[in-house]
Image 1 (cartoon, rainbow, N blue to C red):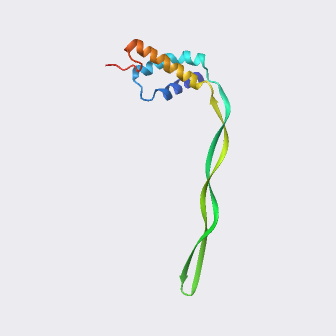
Image 2 (tube, rainbow, N blue to C red):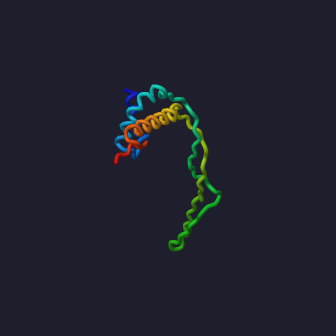
Image 3 (cartoon, helix red, strand yellow):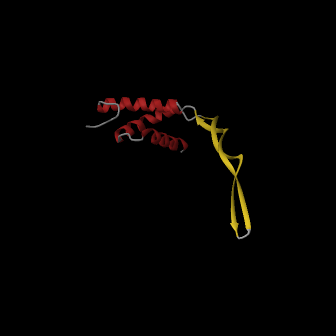
Length: 122
């Protein structure tokens, strides 16, 4: 079940705007590609940044007058800083090789069947 979902998902990501004939060729290539390059997820650290608001040390004040009473309201002036952090994610280390094999295989099938690597029909 997991393998079927993975094959379907991988094929969907790879195909984008491909012709139906190309999609068919790639789906025919998928089982062999997944056999040679099975899903192999490993934890990998990925660099990210997040935006945080930090005070600048300055204030912006507004004074309002109501009769004989003055009311001053101040707010700190903030700026956006970007703070780096690491996140552990699971990465399929075989994905690139598997996708490459499926693309090559599909191009070869298309070339044989339609005379072009995109499976474009006339």
